[in-house]
Amino acid sequence: ADLPKEGGRFDLPIALGILAASGQIDGRRLDAYEWVGELALSGALRPARGILPVALAARAAGRSLLLPHGNASEAALVRDLPLYPAGHLLEVCGHLNGTAPIAPRDLPAPPPSPTDAPDLADVRGQSHAKRALEIAAAGGHSLLMIGPPGTGKSMLAGRLPGLLPPMSEAEALETAAVVSLGLDPPDPRHFYRRPFRAPHHSASAAALVGGTGHPRPGEISLAHNGVLFLDELPEFNRHVLEVLREPLETGRILISRAARKVEFPARFQLVAAMNPCPCGYLGDARGAVCSCTPDQIARYRARVSGPLLDRIDMQIEVPAVPADLLGRGRPDGERSALVRDRVAAARHRQLERQGLPNAGLTSTDLDERARLDTAGLTLLRRAVDRLRLSARAYHRIIRLALTIADLEGAGSIQAAHVAEAVGYRRLDRGVA
Image 1 (cartoon, rainbow, N blue to C red):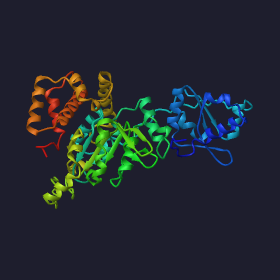
Image 2 (cartoon, rainbow, N blue to C red):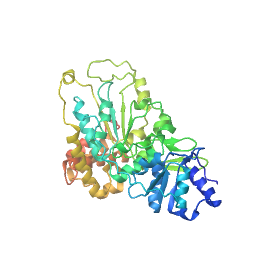
Image 3 (spheres, one colour):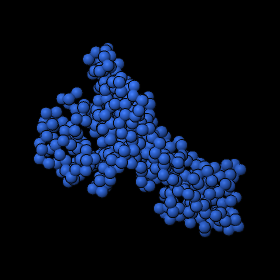
Image 4 (tube, helix red, strand yellow):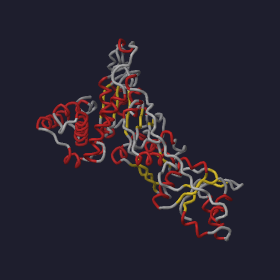
């Protein structure tokens, strides 16, 4: 009784407990099942929220699951789980008493999600940004793009999911289980598609990390195993942005309330975009004149703290696109399918070597698995001294260089890999 409850999913088990205690149904058969569902006043079973975690727990416990018809397609995402969908409390009573057994449903598994993400070839120019996007996809790295308005930052971010390899069944189930706890149930048609979340910059801290009286997952957890895109990064409340620091490091978020604590997974890939100044035209190659004072520019950039920037693996400039590239009628550059093949090969090397993408490696893992040749180590030490890099930035450069080496199929990190990785740290001290 002291456990906090919300919603109507306990209606059916409570009703069955009363019926069993009063001798109206055979209570000896209750232990073989898990029960979930909301009851209408007429006795009809209505769908409940959060069915997928229930189905996973029922399978782990070796029990069958009896649930409303409206939840059957969601629960069918869990393989090897006997499902008994019902539409009314009387059907459940008939099943338990043996007078009208409910036949178990064998629903088909979801098909592979179609790859219908926008194509990378639609973005004109920006070869440097496309290369950074490929590296970010291959290693699971976070990325910040800085440039004037209209240079394609949002277009590039929207094409990242199309470069990522499809989720495994375990990843898809984990992601769908988090979505199931939110406001809308997961769509079985997109079961293997990586999520892409893009909250508005007016989002609160609770909307981003989760919360309310009965904690629900926020945007960072709904982006689990996928991409979280924050456009106009400095326009977000600074307090809201600071809550990203812990999940970027740990891959989880702990929400504490007076009644209970809830931990949600949050292994997301952060992609952010910002202008170089409040008006957006500082350093614009098209000739637009910046109207911001140095003090305004400093205050604008200070909205994103140094510790948060330090946790973003890649920081690149996205300059204006020349007019002659915009007028071309055919796609510019490689299509997403070709880049995705290289990303999948590099990600496969990482999973075989260490069981996770390079972005998740700890400093101890890097000491054991990242082999730098003599020239690469010398260049890295020189960059650390000259740019006055932090220890966190030092290890992030090694992770980036390791991903670049994986894309090339190299056995060790070479000086060219380190040099390219250092080039993606645009906002490090001494460069900005």
